[in-house]
Length: 379
Image (cartoon, rainbow, N blue to C red; front, side, top):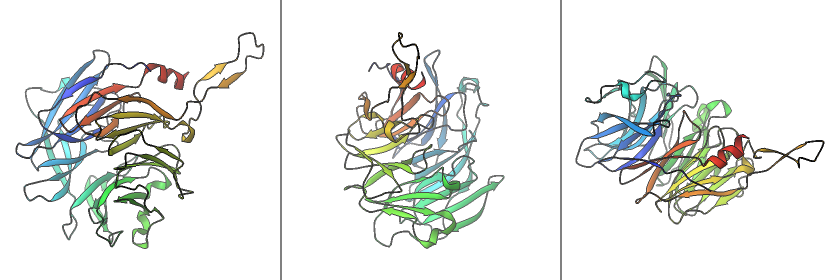
């Protein structure tokens, strides 16, 4: 399948955290957090213009240390959170207001490129016992709540519904009494956004935030033979989710029957760090690994769009009935332009056919889904 050449953006420092700027729905924009041990770190806001094929940036200094996770508010383009490690070597979480940020639909080029932006801390997400934070999750859809998952699997719920002020924080008991560390977490957009999944090494638990101390709703023991590194919920089918891990596998699960995955892909040669569904076309799934590869996979048989384009029968057929040509499961394209471990991938929130990947050496690649695949899905 033909591929367009990627757009390359290079950072001066190592980096491993990437997300789309979800609150921006008109411009293709990604947020990258650097991970330098000695120099000041920063959030790079990178914008891609498809018409001019140009990349613009705006930098926001991040004084609190190495950035291990960057997560954007689902609706507000100027609100982000980071998980960071400072000089005390403790993993902490902070919510920031970015300033300045262009209005929705305006280019980042409208900002003064000779100056840097500012990150104003509006909340420090720290539990009373000052445990280390592994993940920060924004409530899907409206972002009124935030969950922090501590390394020992304690879940903390923070309410931001009152003008961004933190209220009614709820702290759970650790989900697991063993010494297993949290390796992944995500918030389901389904079931009233009340369910959060947490992976601890090879095991996965899903809890209901309304009764978080009453145990898990369901769990998958030994979902992978090596630690789970990431998980994602199918945005359009409430019973399906994907996991990936150090065993090089991406597994797809139907939570109604967890005896075995409904699809198991082993398309990487080393650890798989992240897996991400396309929000609009959930048959398209990205995975990124330590083999320096990004794999675009079809999971069409499990998607909300199990069929490809509508095709007409032979022109001589007077009935001119339509038949469907299904997209087969499997690898669509493997991207191998990175030279280092790829830690993050992200679909654009403004263009469902554009995605970015970030390798540890600080290289960001922006790709577009092959045109022939796009046309087969749309037409």
